[in-house]
Structure formats: structure tokens, C-alpha cells
Amino acid sequence: MPMSDHFLTKDLQLAGLLYAKGAGFIGVNRSGRLCWFVFENHGVCEKLQQQFFSKSVDVNAKEYADALRTLKDLVFANEQ
Image (cartoon, rainbow, N blue to C red; front, top):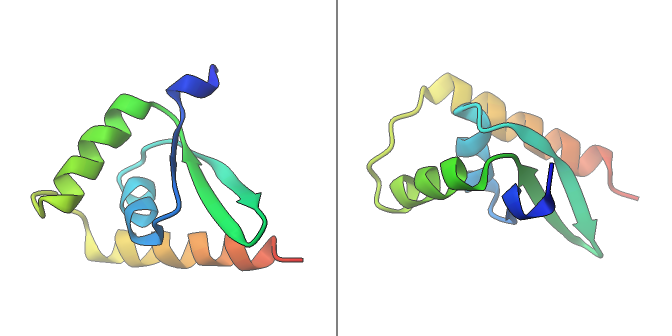
């Protein structure tokens, strides 16, 4: 998959939404102490990001909480 189709964010809450909505999580890329969450399908992620910031997206609260926990676990598991 070309890198141009990937969506990157360092915003944990946005990444949690994307993860909970099944946006195709690829992994966590580190740049020093900064973590970037990488997802597939840039277009879908852009649309969800717009809905996230305009507060017009619906997400299951349990799925969102689980997504945040999973992403945090990945960040801290990869810490060196």
C-alpha cells in the first residue's frame, strides 16, 4: 500500500475514534518520544476526523474506551 494513502495522527483521542470505527489500524511509528498512529485509507480517516472535530460522529462508548486502552498499551509496550 502506498504511504500516501496512509493517515497519521499523534492525537490519541482521534486515533481511538479511528480504531473504534474500524479505520484499518496499521501500527505505531515512533519519532523520538513522539508516537504517530498509522491507519489505512486516508480518505475515510479524513472524513472521520472532520466529524470528530465537529462533534458529529457517533461511536459506541465501550468500543471507544477499549480502543484508547489498546492504543495506550501499544504505546507503552513499545517504550524503550
